[in-house]
Length: 185
Image (cartoon, rainbow, N blue to C red; front, side):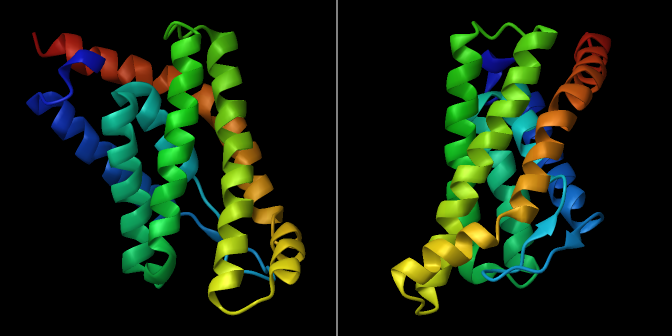
């Protein structure tokens, strides 16, 4: 499926993943108090990781940027939506690089490691994003570092759910996408 980046099927799947990612945040989000930003628990990161695994780097990141970035723009986070999109790009690049190192073999072990990779990378990018957000509102650098660290609980919970849900959902999505792809011939 990766070789058909510009096919109608890939464009439709990219749009579908973007919509699912958006809905994965919009429908189920649980706000968490934090010193920096307004974090919440959601499944958008899990779905963005799955988009990269199924659609490849370009289309997966595009779906994640539209879904996560679009949510931010439409729901009061427009000022920092560029940081969300940057996070999607970084997580997508790391995830794709690890998947490529695995030879794109989607064994159970590899997909579990990819879920952990996506979650761990998200912790790092969210920490950096929180520092930037704190600096944007005039916080001193030292305070931004500490406040951002203290604001990580929501990210850690999201990352743990990503590490768990990516493998669980990957094989379900793979079956559905495979049936859809082979059923249309």
